[in-house]
Length: 236
Ligand code: UDP
Image (tube, rainbow, N blue to C red; front, side, top):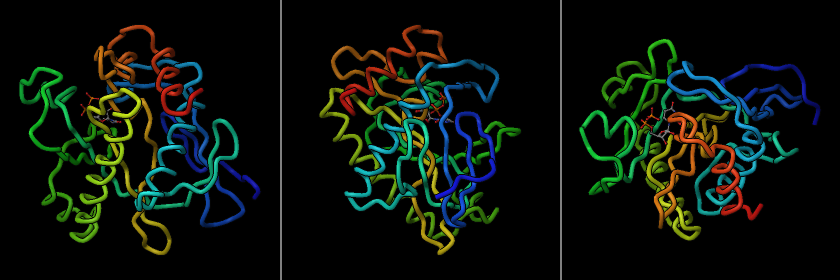
């Protein structure tokens, strides 16, 4: 497979065309941003950790019946994935109140939610990724009702699988963000990444934060937190 020109550069990844029209390559960067790009920095080693962790988890989800865009890891920070058109939604899955939910509803961070909460945000940096509901999504034509049913059931299934898996490595999965895409054949698959950039991970015993909140909130030990998650999941 030949890697061709860069198609797109995002905040944390670059995407390249390949000589196969249905395949692209993603390359993970060490760049970190927060607060809609207002805060910028570098987390040394993050690109490689997020690449390998995402691929490890995507493979696990595939085995459990969740279709994903993953094809093959080709280096520590590069992976071949199915080319998809991304549904312009951030699907947020929450088990415990934290971050923007705590702020919005005045809940202490760490409050267990009685059931899993799903939220949808319209992916648009200029607008600051506003929260939308299924009426907005249908009205704007971002996804069909059938696709939304699939997205909801896949998101809940991912939550069940990941929550159980992370429990086994002593981590509480507080919340996370998913993105979905459509392949050329119209198959809905899980896309993007699953990493400390996109999930909140708390140590189950000490409740220490092991994710990007250490960067967002200037807590220190950012690289160490990513490395600790890498050790717990991939043993390295
Ligand atoms: N999240 C993300 N990208 C975003 C917004 C949120 O990956 O653009 C993740 C975030 O890491 C957290 C979850 O989604 O695990 C819920 O985030 P929240 O809505 O609390 O927003 P935040 O407090 O991160 O601004």
